[in-house]
Length: 309
Image (cartoon, rainbow, N blue to C red):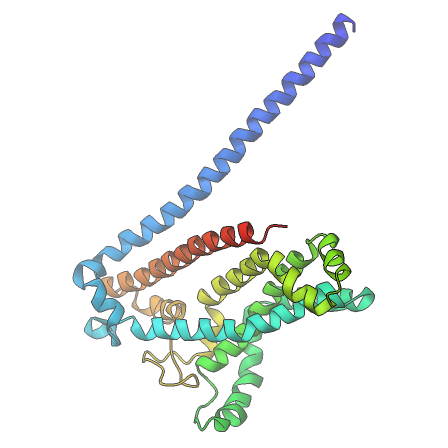
């Protein structure tokens, strides 16, 4: 190697090391920025929530069922119960459909059929949730009020917890399907071949081998659906009724924590205690989702260790 070639090689190596160092700094800075952004949001919400926390005990805020800002009554229990109802009902209705559709797309559908079904799922995931809300007002609300509720002996206009849960199940299902399909398709073909080779049927292979191996990914899909339902705003705001009372049935009108903010923040933000109470609702949403994510991460790691392939 000549002296010039040696010098050029040294310069090239120096540039590559410089790029590597700068890339490392940039990625570290991006990670720190994300962490600082989260801490900044939580800190801001906490500071803005201090007036209501100083005025009322936390236990009273969480267990009182009376919400009347004009009389300084700030009971979050109806909104908390409504949020829990909507989230649980949505996940109960959405998870079986998402899992069944994902298994069909990943393991049974072939060729153009698979492409067509997968593309429709992607299109559904891209539709804004407000469109689902508007369609539900025209179709689902009358259907629930005229046909579904009477079957269970309930009287309702169709606006309520059940309608919100039904529509949110449609909204979140495409996201869960896409992630579940990716988890199943990422499994090596050796798993399928080994199971089929020892005499298992295709259904037995899916049930006993593939679902276990793809368990962490499927769990992540469910987690994504939970977070989207828990923080949903526009669909519940259109369909739940805005009733600040604990629902006495799934067909009753109610309230969720996000819709409580949407319905009251604009017109009541000039009242210091009311503003602080609504900011505290936002803080509760962030904390609950964060705690759920931490718990879900621990569960996923346990599943990954248990079902390694």
